[in-house]
Image 1 (tube, rainbow, N blue to C red):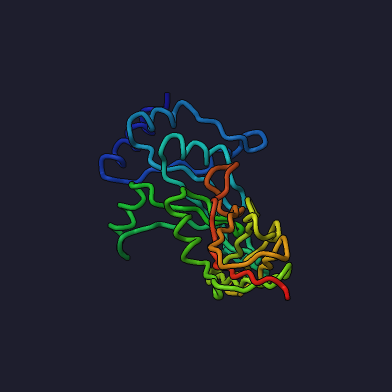
Image 2 (cartoon, helix red, strand yellow):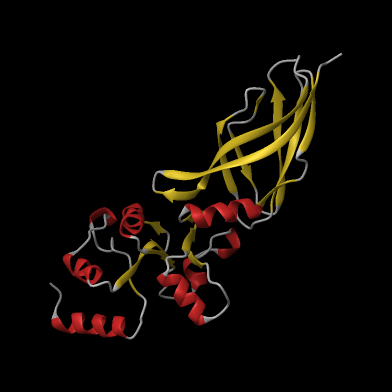
Length: 244
């Protein structure tokens, strides 16, 4: 049970409409292994606790990530910077502070607050996006574009698919299933604001006709849970011509 002053302070904040969240539950815990304390449980049971810090500084907390999913709490990330950010992170080397992405309906404080209470957030840290599929899925598909969705493969040859990543972060794809007609690399990284070539190679030299193929991947740095990454698909139209 928390002391009376803490209880009354949190209660008053909740009654005034404050968005109350719990910072770095693993702080000072052995090996930073987070523990759900009775005090936070009391605030949660009262309906006051609305969010948890999934990322603090450079530390991602998979236990807290699971808590957010299980208890329907908002995911948050914070730099926890106690000094100038340039003294804590090497921005010139590509390091960046963690960020909470808030999916608000407009650019206003009220809309941001409404989105926080509605759990419409994702976490960005160390080139990893963490969040629910409803938010990560559109980020992926609005970031990735196939420049040549129709290709030709002759005989047992290959074609190069041009995949453009218009986002500012790399996207790490791991192949989950290749169509029966072709083979593709097991891994490919879509570099930010770059076009990457993905080789599609025919398995036999006697294929013919045009087929709509679905390439299935896992976007490894789009985390839905501590152990599950976002499944994604890329579609391509391939015309096979036998080699003469």
